[in-house]
Image 1 (cartoon, rainbow, N blue to C red):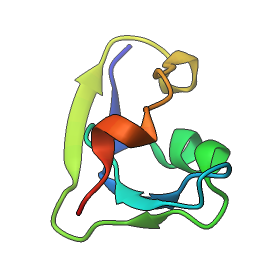
Image 2: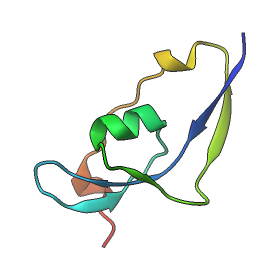
Image 3: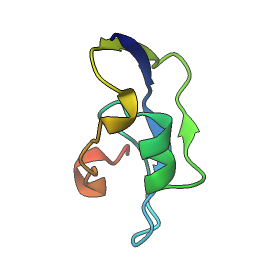
Image 4: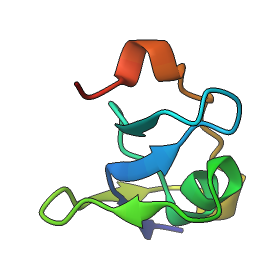
Length: 71
């Protein structure tokens, strides 16, 4: 079975430091909202990928705000 997933860069806020940043790597909406419920998509950053598994089983690592801060 092939599915298409949508991955985006996101504007997020770190819960601890309260720093705003754009994610370095694209994430699914579910992953972004798990990290920051107020996450916003970065327009023009959409990437669609064809996957051979259930897209809900895809998990991404959490991003380090220090390595992804937009200054």
